[in-house]
Each structure stands twice: as C-alpha cells, then as structure tokens.
Image 1 (spheres, helix red, strand yellow):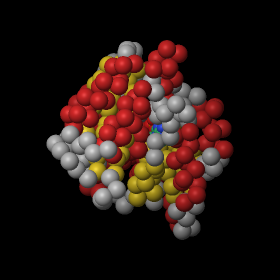
Image 2 (cartoon, protein in one colour; image 1 turned 90 degrees about the horizontal axis):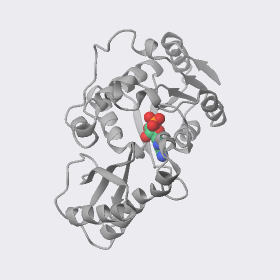
Image 3 (tube, helix red, strand yellow; image 1 turned 120 degrees about the horizontal axis):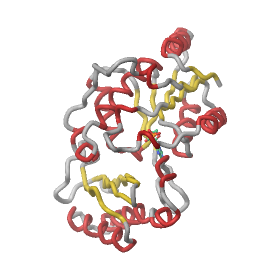
Image 4 (cartoon, protein in one colour; image 1 turned 180 degrees about the horizontal axis):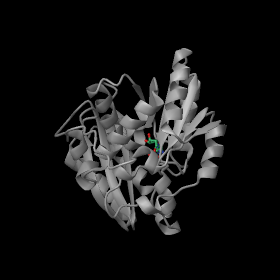
Length: 284
Ligand code: AMP
C-alpha cells in the first residue's frame, strides 16, 4: 500500500491510473477505523481496479465546542487495517495541505443541510460537502462509497454530485453493527462502560418502531412516542431529535407512506450518537 500525503502526488497518481483505463474506487474517512469503514473498502476492492482510502479529520465540519480536538486517532493501526482490506493508496493529508488558507470556497447544498443534523450542527454539512468536493477533485474517483449510518450525509453528497455534475457514482452500503446492535462508530470509544452497556437501546428502539410499522402502524407520532418510551426505559439518554421522514427528501411524513426512514440523534453523557433505519414496505 502506498501512502500519499500531498495533493499534487495524489492527483498525478489518479491521472496515471485513468490514462491506463483503470477504475478508481474511493472511501473517504476520518480514521480510527472499524468494520463499518472496512466494509466500504472491501466493497471498493471487489468492484474497482484501484482502491483509494483517505483519512482526514476535517476541521471545517466540526462546530465550536465539538470534539475536533479529542477525536480518536490511530494512524498506525489504521494503516494496517487499510492494507489488510486491500487498499492500494491511502491518502493522508494534513490540515495545512487541505486548507493552506481559510476555505474561501465552500460548497453548500441548500435545504437538506439545514434540517435534522443541520439544526443541531449548523455548519456541519457545508464542511462535509466542501471537503468531499475537494477530495473528489484530488482522488478523481469513478465511484465513492459511503455508509448508510450517516444517512443525511449520503443525501447531501448525492445532491452535491448531481448539482455540480461531478460525474462520481455514489454507492451507499448498509450500517455495520456490533453484535448487540449498536452501530459502529469511531465515537463509540468515548462511551464509558456504563454508557456502552446502555447504548444498544438506540437500535432496539428503532427495531421496535420497525416492527410497529410492519404490523400496520404508520402514524409518525405513535412511532416517535414508542421510540421515546423504549429509550427512556434505559435511562440516562437525552434525545436531540427523532424524525420519521421520506427516504429521498428527509421531509417529515404525516401519515401512511410506502417507505420511510427513521432518523435519530441522542446523547449518552457527553457522547452524541446518530442512527437510522430504512423501512421499505413489501407492497411497494
Ligand atoms: P467517518 O470516519 O465517521 O467520517 O466515516 C467514514 C465513512 O464510513 C462514512 O461514509 C460513514 O458513513 C461510514 N461509516 C461509519 N460508520 C459506519 C458503519 N457502522 N457502517 C457502515 N459505514 C459506516
């Protein structure tokens, strides 16, 4: 596996692969890699000639008082994991390389960036869209792989690619979970043992709502109330939001629909976790 830290070198490598007619698959990450990240890399390995992964803890997507300074890092372990997952090139720029001066150019995907996560993290998706746009221009992928875990992010990226005619195919892969249902996340490392013991209630609450939908309940408020009740049974969890939404637009649903996504964000102590469940009904 080749490690590249400079943008110009990464672009030259990408140009060279393209001139040889090779397809480039790309997995952008913030590191502290787990099975969720690795599932994206393995998929890229299966479907593309060249696999590029990046690790960059992007400062512009963190708000004031968020966890930028303590975001977990393990460069050595990450390198080993990438290599084992079949990554050809690991792009590892530092913040000065990516942002030599203030990011005077920003990419804003209007509308979708301001709801749900965007209400709690106001500039988050402008930071995400800007860095992913830059990474796409640096790595020049044919296909980029993202996790459903960050559902709203996937829609932001797809809309950015469509809106700016970037010509990158976006593939979204299922959320990888721990055996007890907790969605894998680098931020799970913040949980103390007691919080970690409680955390699977998030997926339990979503699964309970899924069962309700499948047995005929479609009324969003009833579903939200059930999710709240399951979360409260565990205790020690505060809810940022629970939304029952249209899977394409994320607009809140008001009644019986054919498919829906339930998205939520909660806090356990100082740790903020997000999760979601996509429910497609058979009649569709
Ligand atoms: P991050 O390092 O958290 O920015 O995530 C990098 C990529 O991995 C994003 O596309 C995430 O959606 C994806 N990802 C994170 N956690 C998971 C998971 N548990 N399952 C699948 N993909 C994930």
